[in-house]
Image 1 (tube, rainbow over the protein chains, first blue to last red):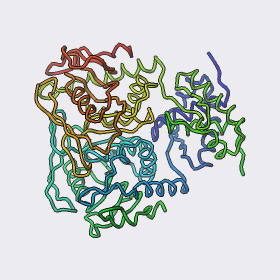
Image 2 (image 1 turned 90 degrees about the vertical axis):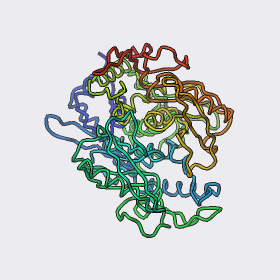
Image 3 (image 1 turned 90 degrees about the horizontal axis):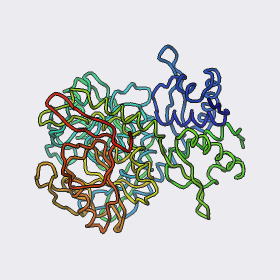
Image 4 (image 1 turned 180 degrees about the vertical axis):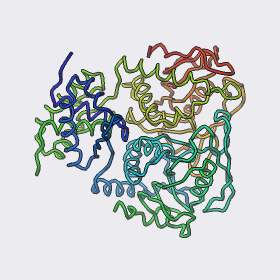
Length: 271
Length: 271
């Protein structure tokens, strides 16, 4: 069977690690695929770990024991985070985004894989090490971002629906009050979609009054589960009184008038 | 400024390529980040390319010219595709999945990043080189898969909604007839969401009668755009007469009875 040089082995190790963030991978897997002794693989991993950490491109953790191995923890350096937050501000400042009702059109950004994959790493790094079981969102615009956060944390995604669906089996439905306009709304979650007694984070595109986050909290209570964190792409600081205190955002905006967004800036943790 | 050994440079090159599939990356980017001559980077790229191709883990293409550089094209080897298709069959054969109406509960799979990221590479590889502009889906269950296909093809995702939303600006709405139950349904797409005269592929979780695909085709016509391909995770062969002929699926199922799924197997192209 073919042998590979270290140059080539580290390429494959990097690829496999990156494709399964936050999942423990046994050294056997590398050893078999690359036809190399575990001790050799261990030396390869040192190379990968050193350069990733040196360039603030993620960490590799070693997990001891029978079920042990290594896992890749995605992260981005401070400079890159700031650069990305500023880039997002520039994209949002584009005048054509304000639509009737002083609403900001940002669907194009939420469905852009280049933007969402970076935002996903940034938000996931805020919840790393918190033993999250699920990432939850409510349809529709936040789904790609929530998916990326779930992928980076190595956990399952859960999506609450606006109405219950025949394809979901038995569902739990709750009512909640929108924080911004006081309207009563509904969300449903399939009983099969998560185990009870879980720790979840809620990911969404936009934080306004915080009503949806309160709704998610109530919905999770029906599963005896806990909301332990909230992350959004954009925090609308125009709603001064929010129903939720603790959450992280990538950018925050102060004002929207009829023609453009004014006063958008990176959130404190990323500036 | 620090210099890196080849071992370390190839790790970083691999990481950057993998994070932006199907996007052209100029050698300057690597050269500056790694403080190495372009000729050195070119040699590094040869190493990365050789081992990825050797293990059927993707290709690296070189694009000549001023805007040139290299791009990573994700792919999976034949054996891995077959292995994954069989794994998916096993997961679906689990008896607890059939819910009232002989519907198969597969939301857990559609929201599982480990499964969806692999399925995304497999489906994207069917449309590689076809100059796709957008990946389109209709909310909700197919969104993570469509997002992965879009990410792998390096294009924007577009999501049709079941009803028009205030956050989407002006929308185009069409009616379509569900292929399986003949019911009239609606879908809407924001005018801002795509450029006219585009080539799109439609990605979804499930193909039954093909009515949704016909709806997408009609919707795209309103944008003077063309549907050039369809990919789904599961093809339900129970609906013999489909409104759509050409599409790819990862697995196909022949029969669902009240207690379990019978006759599920990898689709021909992956078996």
